[in-house]
Structure formats: C-alpha cells, structure tokens
Amino acid sequence: MRSRSSVVFTGFAMFFALISLVVGPALAEESFNIKGWEKGGDYDQLFDVAEKDSIKGWVREIIEITPLDGMTPGIGLIVEDKKDRAKETVHLGPKEFVKLDSIGLKEGDMVKVVGAWAEVDGQDVMMAIKVKKTEDIQIKVRRSKDGFPYWEMTAEERQKELTGD
Image (cartoon, rainbow, N blue to C red):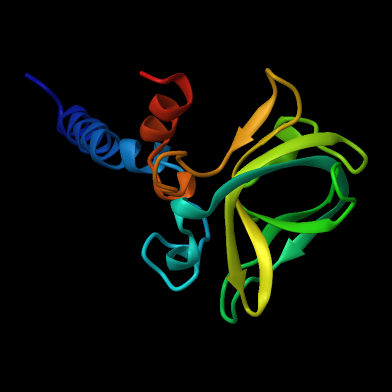
C-alpha cells in the first residue's frame, strides 16, 4: 500500500509534467518587443515590394531608429552608396530582433542591401529585406517575395524561410 506522501508526490510530479507539456512550447517561442512594427501596422503598410531595389556601399553608421511616433526602437544603417556616394538610410527592424553581431557587421564594412524604397516621416529610406556582407554572410529581416517581416514569424517559420525548405 502506498503512503499518503508518495501519492501526493506522484500527483505533484504529474501536475508539473502536464504544465511543462502545455507551457514549455510557448516558452520556447521567441517573443520580441515590436510595438509599431507589426504586420499590417502603419509602418508596415509603407513597405511596397514594387519599390524593391538594391544598393551596394559602405556602412558609415549603425543607428537606433524610431520610424514613427510610439514605435519601439529599431536598428538602421547609414550606407554610403558606392555609385554616387549618397548616404542612404536603411531601416532593418526592431532592436530586439535585429542582431548585427550575428554577421559581425560593423562600420566600414562593404554591404549589399536589398529592400524597398519608402517615404517614412518625410524621409526617403530603404526598408531592408536583407543585408549581405559577403556571398555567404547575410542577415534577412523580411521575405523577398512580399516583404513579410521575419520578426512576425515563429522560429520554425523563420528557419523554413532561411533554409528554403
């Protein structure tokens, strides 16, 4: 016959096992502070894949941006265009999502930026899809075909996009 304490212990163990099955997957999902960066929001609606273009140049500055009032901070670049030496502002995405250290990007690096031109708060900017440091080193922030932001995807969806599966 089991003791009362072993029944209670078994009950607690089953309870915590059940909680970990239900809560565990939710905790594994990344969650980013993206206020104002959401798909379909005012800022996102400025992205038009028909305005897709690319520039190649040097990263002159890595900047913190707040494209529209009330948005959480984001990361941007000032890129000096190799062709005409114009300094272009590139918006990458929310600060919590964009991790430039993942590709070792720093000021002075030559990059190719693919994105879409937009007017944000009266300024022409490139809303990035990806930034390539070399042929094999890049950071993607939006889906090429339609500009869907990677920060709105689950970790599994992002992995599928990045691997092409």
